[in-house]
Figure: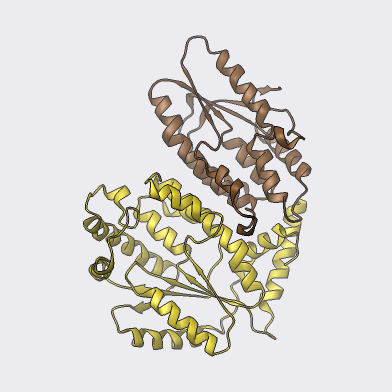
Length: 255
Length: 182
């Protein structure tokens, strides 16, 4: 066994011990997933306000928001220079950087992290662009599973209607890189249908908690509160040990 | 990976200057065929990493390799595949082996590395440049030299020289091939 394998095993044990300690409130990771126009950002904000009132120390992380990688992606999106593989790899890099610098430090210190989109966004969009699910999933390893994934389910028609009521979807959001349709609104309708199909497969595979996003804002918010209360006492997922151990190793074993 | 492309030549190693020299030497040896060359960071991704604020946080080995793969996808799309399609011989400096060795030296799962790079066509010829990494910062032009500097720069990861040596060792032991010293 190599020294690094030995260290990773020791650090995995440390991760299990830290997150398995039931004498204190552990860090929780809650992901909000769903297509554009599903209202998840509205719900995320309401949820955060409620959690803070309940005494939780809350941190939010958004998709494609790392200080290091976001500018790289943004400049390439602006000139429409990304192939599906480059798009996928850069978003995975952004995700990894946020896991290492924002999400895991917060979880380790006992905070509740709300992720406005998580790795499932990458999976759904990349697969809708024709990439292989196994390959894309590999990019996100070692996997960090949220304690809860709320999936905001809407039809392609509702998503298209809500998005086009406020803005014209941008080139990549509309999937024009793969549909080759000139009209962004028409392209969006076509692309979001594929994205939602992928999301619905992922919802089954990964046990998302589905929220009917066609309901009123108040109904959804109260459903989320109840679902959160039902789920927050779940035991820490042991399958996260590798991701935490690698992070601890990167920091020289010190959290 | 599909079957090797005879006109794709990979030059891998840890010393960027020595690899560039090896590439030039390899190109000069081509008397009859037209040759193209593809260097790492053709996409400019790493140039942007360098100028990022310290507060953005340093990338880990895994993040750097995801970025390397994105850069390689760019090189394949804009440099390597078009040149191969035109009938040129293409020298890629570095290619996949350097990245895999760097990742292994940093303790990453070899399967993760090889599967991530599965989109890259297999080269028909592979050359290993065995020169050690440059000691002077101004001479560090290679991906491994850059990567080691990035990940050991701010916190107590594996010391830089050890990581460079390990990368070189992985390249030597895992790649049975004709070697070319500087």
